[in-house]
Length: 249
Image (cartoon, rainbow, N blue to C red; front, top):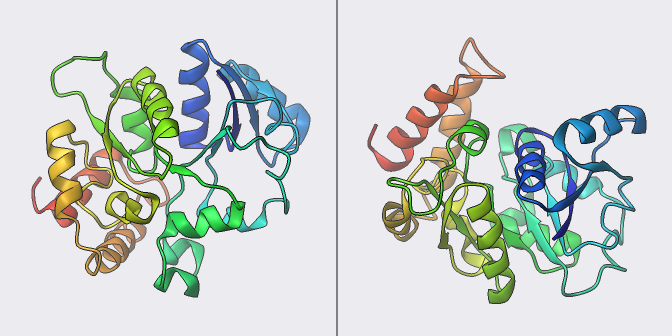
């Protein structure tokens, strides 16, 4: 596939490298000057592109930038993109980082993003930690293979996305419609807790929408107050997510 990735941070960069290694043609862009972007792209096995060109002549587009940055994208960025191109988003909303967004009191974060982009999207790779994505993928069929969930309204697009997830080393669980994607977002049992397929299905079902925001904010405050902030250890993040979102270590 031809895939354009907007953002080369912890998730976007890792996806670019893994999907390039899987044989896909990858274009990437970020906010850096082109000479620096070209170096980053080369290190990932990808091609550097401008924000306008990264969405052209591709089969899929992955938005992997901070939640608040999505509002600053060029207007009508996807206007000329064919409707059959798969649009994925990996972002998560943290009010302590992104600021309070009043519209999110009435709608799912992913629905909000879909409206900003003016396109249907698939929510994926948002409930996996950078370290997990980079280091803990396994071959299909391996014991205790970690699973992540996929939410969206286009079943055919979700099938293709599931194949991409498999190529990065993880199983998938159908997270339902885009409106139900809150079940895999911060503060829920399914969010970055490294569960296998069966346990992830149970975690999605156990999510409580009313409780998730408070848990999300508590965990973020805890991380911010760590001496290691802004880069707390992976083990600390995972342990906290499991303890406060699931109730287990």
